[in-house]
Image (cartoon, rainbow, N blue to C red; front, top):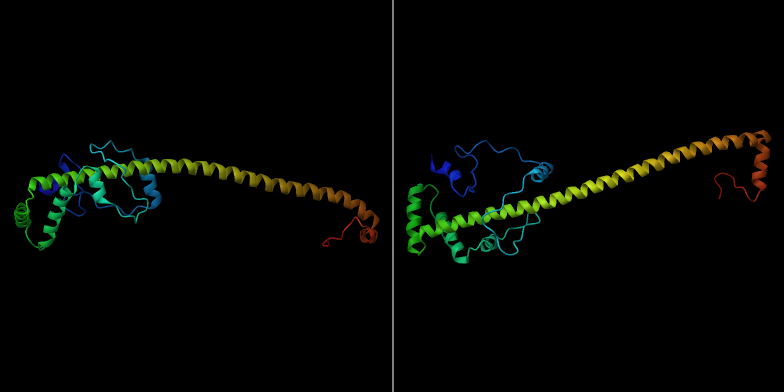
Length: 220
């Protein structure tokens, strides 16, 4: 088994599979819509408790554009600034090497440089694995918080939909009642109109004009 494919077999099991690498599985699916993502997270089983517990008030981003305080996440997992500095130093050294440098040559150069700075490779690997654990725990905290909010949101949506249905029913009942009212009143008007028509239009017009109790149509 190649080293690259072996990452997924580590006891950590939290390494990110790089897209497009050999043996990395199927190509990623098309970007999901917001509705599909909401349904996906709402229906997923909650993650199992992480063996790493983040301490203190770990802030979760409320908006997609909100940056994450990764040093704070690492500190919540018990990684001090010195331990975080080991990974940062290794990352800095890797960036100084030309991209075309063979992997084994890079490893030899970086290991020698780190030892010269007093950073044993074993401690850097340990710190890196701890950071991976901390990030996975942070992902799981975020997922549980997301699922909680989605459950609350779905309950609220269901209540609002029920209320909307009741309001719509009341509106429909009112419109139907108004139609019935208009039909019944118009039928009654025809009964009264028969009497007025019997006396003639001119007689009715004269009484309407002279009576203080009556108003001509369209006049206040």
